[in-house]
Length: 115
Length: 114
Image (cartoon, rainbow over all chains, first blue to last red; front, side, top):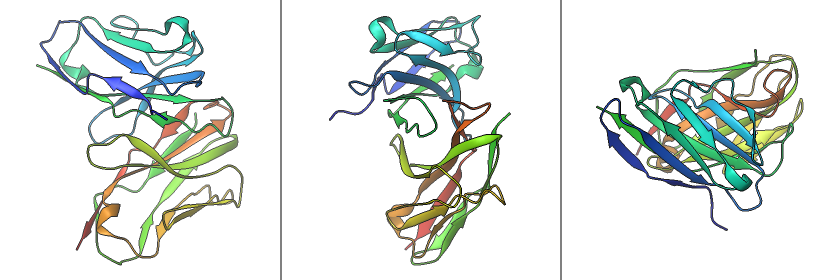
């Protein structure tokens, strides 16, 4: 079974440019997460989807970040315009159900460098 | 809100040494506790989990016991190998304020010398 697939693996862009990341979760997983991981820190939740509905986006900087999960399967996270401080690893994860026993499966991440 | 605190790294040990990585948590309700591992160049992988007090999670020789009285979930391994070199994250989910999101600690980098 394929795991969570993210692309691209690496992205280098100039500040003020737009960038988009794509995630394909594990088949059948209803819950999808986008996490931000800064160097030397643990992942922090940006947004969580249940099917196509964003149920927790309180940590998403909505002035420049947007996300969508059309049809409740794969998802795209966009930054426009990018800032130097956005350089980080963006992780996508999915799980089959919500609740206290939630085990999330992570993709390899997209490492963004803004110059 | 819910949070996780784990010992800062890096931790450097010789092969076959005993490992402990401390993790404590703050949460209301009854969260589940996890250890995730991130090997170089790879994504986060679940190492082990425990869903209620006094549960012991174990995998690949690693163990951690959910201690509600001390709000701890320390990771231990009796004899580490070079292949255990990675970053380890303690995490929780299912507390009153964390609900279905997973809250991570800052990670502990482990290096094992041959």
